Every structure is written in C-alpha cells, then in structure tokens.
Amino acid sequence: MIDLYTASTPNGWKASVTLEELDLPYEVHALDLGKGDQHQESFLKINPNGRIPAIVDRDEDNFAVFETGALMIYLAEKTGRLLPTDPKGRSRVIQWLMFQMGGIGPMMGQANVFFRYFPEKIQPAISRYQNETRRLFEVLERRLSESEWLADDYSIADIANWCWVRTYKWSGVSADGLDNLKRWRDAMRLRPACQRGIEVPARLDRIIDDEKAAENFTKNAQKIVQT
Image (cartoon, rainbow, N blue to C red):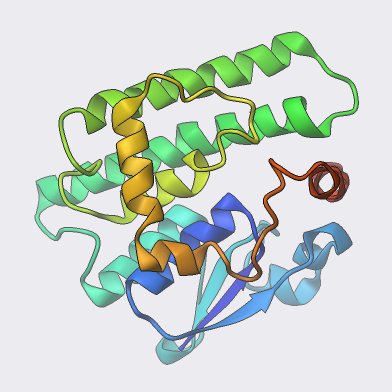
C-alpha cells in the first residue's frame, strides 16, 4: 500500500495519475496548502522540502519518496511499467520527464504567479514566462508531429507533461495552431486513469470558467506563494 500526500495541483496530479495508471493501491492524505500543512514537522519527515506530493511505500519498510520525477520513476520501476528497461528507451522517457520538470513546470508555475497571483501586474515578467511556455509547447508540438507519445510508447513522460499542459488557459498561454499537441491532450484526457487521477484528492472546480471560483482559488494560491 502506498500513502500519497498530495493536493489538487499539477504536481499532485502527476503522482495520482501515475498511481492510477499503474493500478497500485494507495491511501490519500490531503494537505491543505493554504493552512500550511506542508510545513508541519510530521510531513517534513517525509519530504524535507515541504512540498507536495510525496509518497510512503508501506510495503518497503515505509520508504519515503519526494520530488515528482523521482516518485514517478520509483513507481514505474516498482511495477515494471511506463518506463522501458533498455538504456535508450529509458533515457528517452527520462529526457522528456526532465523536460517537464526543468521547463514546462517551472515556466508555467512562474506564469501563474505573475499572471494570476501577484497583485502587482509586472508585464515584462508575465510576457517572459508566457512566451517561454509557448516556446516549450512548440517543442512538444514538434515532437508529437513525429510520434504518438513523447517517448514512442505511452510513459510517465506523457503523464508528467500533460498534468501541467492541460492547465495552459490558467497560465494565460495560447495553444492555438498546435494541432499535434491538441491531439495528444485529447488522447490523454480520455484515458480513464487520467480522469480519475486529476480528481485526487478532490475534484477542482472549473476555475477558468467560473469567476467566483477563480477568485477563491487565486486568494488561496496567494497565501501559498507567500509561504
């Protein structure tokens, strides 16, 4: 059994979608980031960085794993799925996983901060992160024009990137004209495990279409950004 410590964010979904795809039994421990649950000493013993998600594998002497990329690799290797074992295939998946961790996630995260959460709108910063996110989307588009999935076969690389890319409207980034990216997004969205995973620990309101929900989400996010 896996204990999953998480919240409804793109990084949190990376863990829950992976667990769903791998059919691993897990127990959800929802952390209220606005209240600072991630800074409690009990959680810091699991993840010293104080960020979600993290897991504890009860079947392996309560082995704890933090950092989403490390977590996803651990689960894939535990089950022998979603990550090839041959050196080239494994490397290909990890390259696109690192692409998300080093590019898509940080750039979209900063776009969210400057476009949505900071009360002062600093346009050069907003443009910087939105433009870089769009550039990264175009990298994905180019790759997906050559392959159905990012690393040939469906893998944790697709999960990691999709959990962030699917929120592009919230970041204020255009995905217009990226037909292969849309094809891939639609294919991911239709996967039952993806549908289940993004509702962990709770279903997130359609904040992009609901002004009141967006306002409430933004206020809560502003508290998190400041901690």
